[in-house]
Image 1 (cartoon, helix red, strand yellow):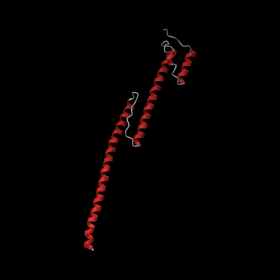
Image 2 (cartoon, helix red, strand yellow; image 1 turned 60 degrees about the horizontal axis):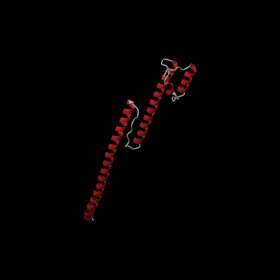
Image 3 (tube, rainbow, N blue to C red; image 1 turned 135 degrees about the horizontal axis):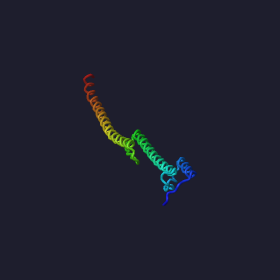
Length: 145
């Protein structure tokens, strides 16, 4: 297949399409002669398209983190978020959030157990005091009366 060249009008049209954010026609220009202006515009379009794809993936990753943080803040610790694009910063942030949610879930379980034990101890204390009050009041009333 022979490399083709774009004239000035075709190059301008390709550039306008790319600037408008339409990357759907890029595959149609894969056979442009290297070094030509049209080829350089095509390579720029390919680079912009990849950067846009990565930015959208990062945005989705950040939205996942925000959604997960809102769930944790409302007391839902049963989360595990994953990231679809290689981004070390977001991956570390998501890993940290997952670990924090696991730790909060464990602490919440311990807290509930401790609260239940404290409530049981308080009920036992109240029953003991009521019983002792009755047991002490009867003999004291006999002595006083």
